[in-house]
Each structure stands twice: as C-alpha cells, then as structure tokens.
Image (tube, rainbow, N blue to C red; front, side, top):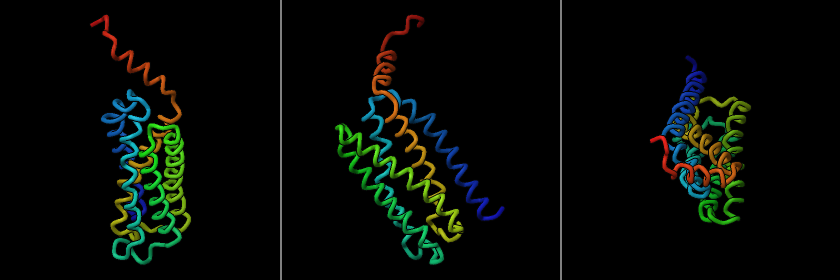
Length: 174
C-alpha cells in the first residue's frame, strides 16, 4: 500500500473505532442527560486542540510540510480550543449555548477544511511526522464529538427530559 492508502485506511479505521466507542460507551449515557450536562464531556476534549500547534514545530513535522496547510490547521485548532473553553465557561447560560454553536461550527469547519486543504496542496503524510497521529487518531474523535454536539443542540431539551422521566417509571412487565 502507498503512504496515502495507509493514511486513508488509518483515518477510516479510526472513525470506525471511535464510532463504536462513542455509540456503545458514551452516547447511551449522554443522550439521557439534560443538554448542558451532555455537552460538557464532549466539549472537554476540545481544549486539547492546542496540540495542533505541533504542525508548526520543526522536528515534529517535516520542513517540507506545506505552510499553506500547517498554519491554518494549527491556528484554526488553537481558536477552536479557546472557543471550547469559552463555551464550557458559559455552558449553562443562554450565551453559553450560542458559544457552543460558534465553537462547533468553527471547530468542525476547521477540521473539514484541513482535509480539503490537504488534498488541495497535495499533502504527503510522510511530512506530518509525529503529527500523523493527530490526524489519524484525534481528528476522527473530534469530528464525531462535533456531530454529537450538533445533535444535542438541534434536538429539543424536553425530549431528553421525557426519556429520563420514562426511564424512571417502573416497568409494569417486570
């Protein structure tokens, strides 16, 4: 397999693995919580996006890594990390919900743009150095959490309350 095929396979398998982890371990619990409580653990992953600054560090990445890709990816991640912290700080307020929207729109767009821009500049996975694992391990998890954040933002808070109330009632068949 070529390095691009290995890169693509690593990303695809990471999406599958994280999807299984989220669907079986986290989502069943999160979807029954009130929105702010469900958003908190998803948002807590994103302040670590400062790690994207590694795309600017010589020795971590190759000097041949195109700056047209590395700079927007690194600084876009830094902005996403700061927005995640702001959203966490105001999570239970009306402003907090707006900040979660801003964060998730920015963060998801930033990650998708990095994939698009990587194709546009002919990104060679070998130039990523240790940054290879940011894209193949962390980015799929972050995109999945963005999808879950959007789901929680778009669905009515009362639906979660109704499920919680229904789950609390005794089962007459038991």
